[in-house]
Amino acid sequence: MRIPSEIAQWLEYDNRKVLSSNLTCASRLPLSRFGQPGSIPNFYVVVGFGTPRQNFRLLIDTGSSTLWVPSDKCEPGLFAHNNKFKDISETFQEKAGALCETYGDGSSIEGTLGTDILNVSGTMVVGVTFGQVHYANGLFSLSASDGQLGLAFGETAESFDQTLLEYLFAQELISQLVFTIVYPSPTLSPGKITFGGINPEDYRGEISYTAVFPGEFWRVQFHRMEVNGNTVAHDFIGIADTGTYLVTCPYVSLLNLVSQLGVYLEPEQQVDCKEADEFPEIIFTLDGFRLGFPRDLYVDRIPLFPSLRRFNQRECIHNFSPVTL
View 1: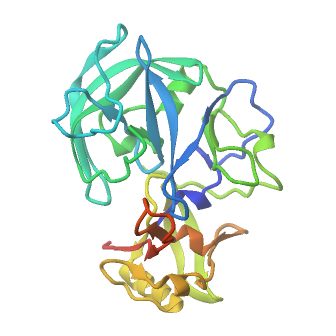
View 2 (view 1 turned 135 degrees about the vertical axis):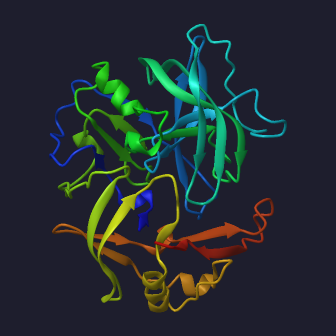
């Protein structure tokens, strides 16, 4: 099962608990939100590439280890509203190999590889491998971001043996192989991603921990998934993936879930907005703690006439998708 980002309030590279006060060597980037009001958002950070610096807005994706930006040599009309990398950088070097990646939603990218200096909130990281995309298909998430910052394990992409986190650690720019994601909230501090530790100012209460299973992705054990006190699924592995807004799970489990909500698995995924306002939380049980998943995180409310705000009409879509195992 693929779990969207909002339930993964922190992520760490191993099963050891992290000392939240150990931030003597860390790097932080503001995390910005994009998406229509009322819709499920995506989040990006701004990272500088090359000399002179070229800034790019990168989607945080824990479901991939690939770092890429659009190339100025991409097909005409592609990435028309995005920043594009120009290889005029004094520190840029081409690298053998090719970029080729297909995502779970069927979208894909192709391009070339290179290395350059990255500016991460004033911290200079040298020799970072990244892709320059020349061709892309179906990348609907890039309405406000330019590219992708992958933070899964290196096994997800052959040409990317290290993620940005690992480059930072190898160059002794951070002291722990840990990153923390804090999402923007009207009542809490602005969003940010911290490489190298957990800032105690970024959370309230106690942090709950669960084991991360070895493999390509951030895989964790879920003991139970329930709606209205009824078990929908139990004893399954979930993936914390910030690169998707979908809740993806096996067809049988998904049928159990939507039947508890009183909706159908229609191809267009539409639900009645008034009914959606009454949908309950989905509860996930992990190692000794429970996570509540409110309806605002699995129902997307899309304005039908975004330029005519006075109509205030919306279409509601549930973000459940079956997967064949």
